Image (cartoon, rainbow, N blue to C red; front, side, top):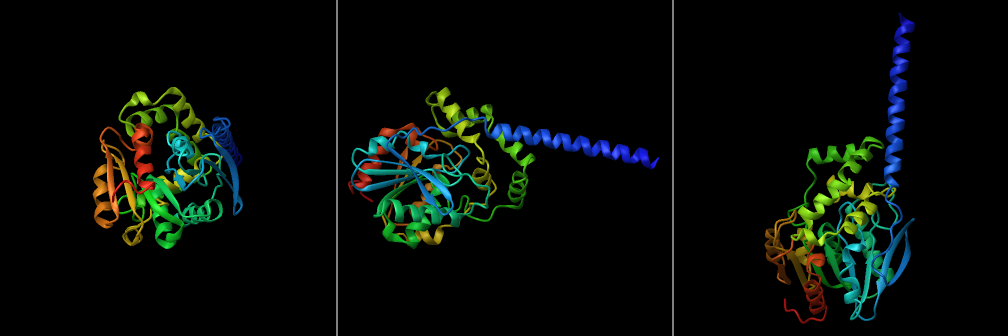
Length: 323
């Protein structure tokens, strides 16, 4: 009887090990399915060594510096600014880094935190830009830029906040359910498979067309493929999972109120995960802020209406758009 039990247990253990190995192999394959990522921004693409990591960035043009900081979501990269980078390089010196964990920068498995990104952005401004810059920040990257601007004002002369968070939305500690989901996503096999279920081709296509833009015809098949490629890279899950798990929430009420720099807020008026109703909080919390809304845009006016977006940024940088 004991021998029979041992044989049954041994069979179960062997079966579980085989399933785990198969799942691990599948997750390894999925993480490399995207293929190489190519830069879409043009200009001069370089790699900056920050701490022990490679930070990819593009630069172009001459003149006063504008730095584009992309948002934080699965598949995020400096390609977010494809419709803005070259156009504004005609009047300014433009920079667009891939933040750590995104794009063609290093994607290490580490504890991503607000302080990590604040340090990265501040060091990029100090070591690469080397003079006060106009910084354009999208979504959940905006709070990091706000904190940098408040703690070291000489680094940032003006701000452009594209659908920002941090006053109330994504500002407090993550609720228990969100923290548990983050722990689950950190597991080596099941967490990785959960991530890849979230970034399947079907899910990517759905989110791009229903949550990102008001006009779905703007999303081409190549846009789907580009996003799929970005999300299916070794280590691509770590930073987005930290975002969705609430690990990058940061309360910027105090630092935002202290800002003395002019602040331009750009926001799409159509329904999105970061609604335009949040804009009033940013206007009320700092008298230096002014809002420019896009009636026919959702969460990415820089992509949906690039000419208007670029004109606002240019006029703001030149001091021609009054606060």
